[in-house]
Length: 159
Image (cartoon, rainbow, N blue to C red):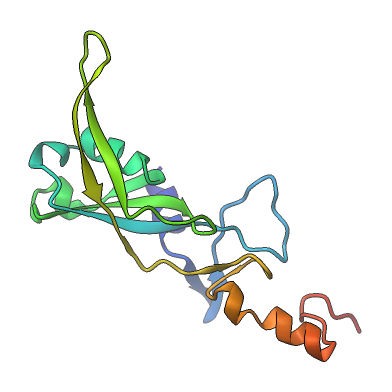
């Protein structure tokens, strides 16, 4: 899991000076479409200290996306003002500005207490649902310009 997180967490790798992008495989994989699943660092400012423990922090992060790893500063209790977790996030969907953190009674499984926790994201690349690529929004898609000019995208051209 540690190797997976390290490889997946760095989107661009260089092989003999050539960039290689890493994407998560899904059953819907198509070579001309980039997956909207991407690793993103999520920050929780002012999270209570008792939730900095691994299980508590992963539980909070799980409400945002699939947790991949906790920042080493949190594990070593160096930065206690902000908790940071790397999560696998679908950037084609709207991002949550806050999440509800609730506490459940162990005996009757009823909600005892809770609070709204603000969520900040680090380095989110926009996802275009027109050309299915990371890095730009639908409004900035070159696919519309290519259609207007009668051009085919480079991955479709044949000679």
